[in-house]
Image (cartoon, rainbow, N blue to C red; front, side, top):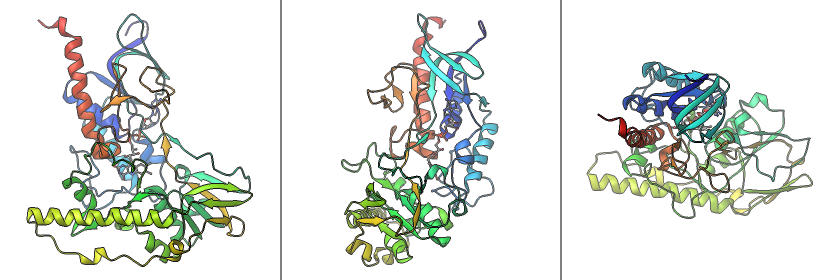
Length: 419
Ligand SMILES: Cc1cc2nc3c(=O)[nH]c(=O)nc-3n(C[C@H](O)[C@H](O)[C@H](O)COP(=O)(O)OP(=O)(O)OC[C@H]3O[C@@H](n4cnc5c(N)ncnc54)[C@H](O)[C@@H]3O)c2cc1C
């Protein structure tokens, strides 16, 4: 330590799954490093999710290769607290050098000497490399169309905890990805009147012919594709591990009493306006569902697998009235809606990372996490290298790649010191 500046080779910012995976791989490759976390290990799993949330994938799959979930059946969907406990146990098992309660305020390139100056709540660090593992789900996004109306209770899905937290009355959930659809169903089952605004989505079968969809996406190579098909970049995926895991089926939700509408376009004078696309969106989701069944059948036939037939998986319920006679506008007061939950996703927060690693829109510029600013790496971003990149098992493989790149750079950097 010089002048109270703490020297470190590689600094990892964030101790969620991304930071922990990064540390494991750097330890394996003997790269000196430190993880700084402003809250606690896996804080997002502990406090930034709704009460009943369980992992979207079964325990055998949604984990790191180095450790199984203790006390969980491999096919079960573990609760969010167990995911947080898992990562805490992982930190202990792999002796991850993490300092919690330390916030990174800013990272800047040092002048005239290699590396980065890192200002934190625990003083200044000088690091040769910085890995941003602060996650893709940092800042909740509420779109600009949200009505400016004090009589409405409006929250982002990140602030939703349980039905009792919401005032009496009907609820509109905007966004039908995994969060929106799970929250809407929980509210419906608690006896509330629910409106769900459904955009384009994929909805894989929870399981087919005896195998969970995570297995099918794995064997079919779909977790590993580098980018979504053109035109499907903004298509969300609606899956759920809730209630033991079941397929998301919008026709079934409608039958159960949920009011489905298309994409929310605007609000004016107490009325909400929806795109006339509910039928298209539900049929698109069905097509995605059926195409996975087709690919699974093909795979089974090609590889001679003995998995039970499941023809009933192909029968869909008839088009509900919300598809044939869609609601295109709604008087919120008449419908009794006094709460809107925006399940509309998150953006990143890189104010602390003041380096030339972004495009003009502030988007990280990188190839598989290696940024355009030498020495700066990103981890945990959607499609960092593949579809699986933001998920627990996917980030572990991305971290391995980044660790390899760091080792390669260190070999060049320390070349003159070789005997
Ligand atoms: C509702 C929801 C459900 C999900 N369910 C699943 C699932 O079932 N299975 C699955 O595989 N994935 C799931 N994901 C996706 C993903 O696995 C999680 O979002 C996961 O938490 C991402 O891990 P991460 O390490 O990239 O980021 P995070 O868990 O967000 O960790 C980033 C850490 O960085 C810290 N940090 C941020 N800024 C600073 C700073 N300046 N200084 C110091 N520390 C900082 C934060 O405190 C945080 O702890 C889900 C995501 C959401 C939103």
